[in-house]
Length: 492
Image 1 (cartoon, rainbow, N blue to C red):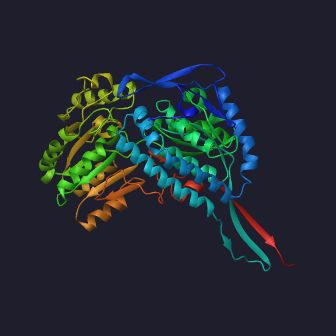
Image 2: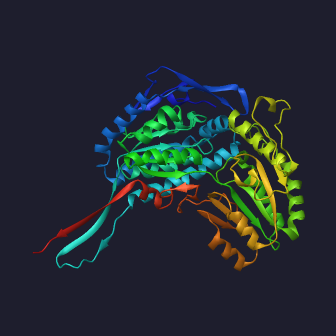
């Protein structure tokens, strides 16, 4: 596959004020394919605070002209980006799989989702309207408009390094803001390829900027610089809380999408075969590294044994390997630290008395020994007080928990610090709708995967899973704009 452009060079640069530039320090960091650590995917700029200040200054300068560009013209430029994304989707899928480890099918699915999200948000930007109201005063016309904030910092994760960027950046840009993007250090090439689309589409200098590097040198500056009016972040709950604390000092608006411990409830009357199929996909797609992955299955006691058997029948069919190789169902986890953390949780599960039913080990048979591969893992006899039942593992580990009845299932499902996604499998309409009412999450599902999400609806969690106006849907543009109310007296 032939690739061209600055984003594909062996040493990838930052993108500031319309130019590809090196870091002022001259230092770089390397990134390797998590499926084959002998495969060096490139060197990337170790961005400094000075680089970040420069990007913020460029974005602030560009804002003064960009926000005056009519919304239809901003949308037209984004349509060019969308066309380039569709044109380069196979190249981007390969880059994504090589950096993140997910399968080509999953990468193509992520790009398809990004296209849908982008198409919806561009339309939202053109029709972002305020309100008109009747007033108490004769001869006075009153209305509201939505205006952009200014510079917005966007900090994105490695598990969805393409879709999340577009989900966040398109509302920012179409509504007249400018952007400084800090991609995850595990997937910097994807971020550069995305920004290259904006460059090739003809975006004015400074409207879209990219700085790669550590959270300490890049992210901290974005969060604390008063010129940055909003921060949209996706990542861990600990980092999200830290961002919120520091952003409060400058009253910077925040949008935090954080961790999850997503339950699937399976009642005795459910279609067990279908529920098992969905649980396997939701637990092991992207090696369990979706924030909406199913990590807990709460099964009513009468069917717990049978449902566990169905899961164990399906696990051996989850073929593990290089995501770019045909036939692979599950790729590696994304990085050495992630590997260590997941294996640590597996050991905690065994030490606390959970019964290991499948997997639980690093896969070391060649050629898997060159990558960060973990066997799809299932624990049984998991109780609500265990670490693996309460903390986000972010890996291919599924905990099966037996509950007496629907009421206990609901109580256990809610009894964690997180509240991102949930699902219930049942044919009882009353219990399904009661679950919908009482589940403490930002998005829930009936007889569907915990991971389902559609572009017109918002995406965000509650409790320690999310904070601020959620992203996507109609709330995407709401986050990065503010209200201005206007009163016009037109008759004495």
